[in-house]
Image (cartoon, rainbow, N blue to C red; front, side, top):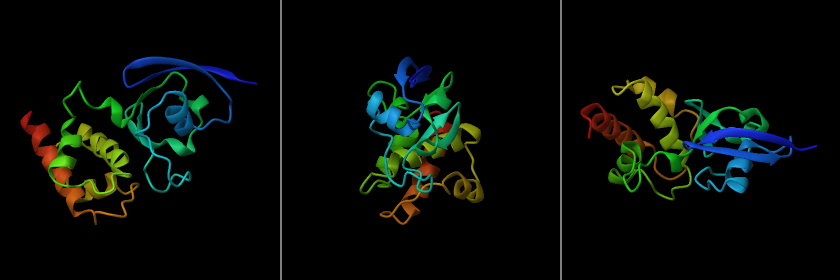
Length: 158
């Protein structure tokens, strides 16, 4: 038995016929082609598959696509405006917060959600915002630098 779902992904209305057991992660990657949503742990532990789900960061690997019917989703591909990267994306590049890059989309989405709430996050707010994201390459210092740079740019309107 398949289901028909409708939702908005990165500002575009989407509809598809899916199997009820299809994960949201597999739907976004395989059905819609959003490869910035990464497959890693498939248990909700690493954050590589983080998306904005009605404005809140969630792990798409532990959700069913059917549960996304009628929602609005933003992936890392939906942050840039044309050729202009979102300030969080640009800050990750400018600070060297990207090494292998596998975890980067999830971090960027989590940081965007944080900076949507506050452009002057405390160290505790930063730690909480990225606590669901794991990086094995950078040691986190450059990621924190990127968060501060993005916050400054967003607060300054740059």
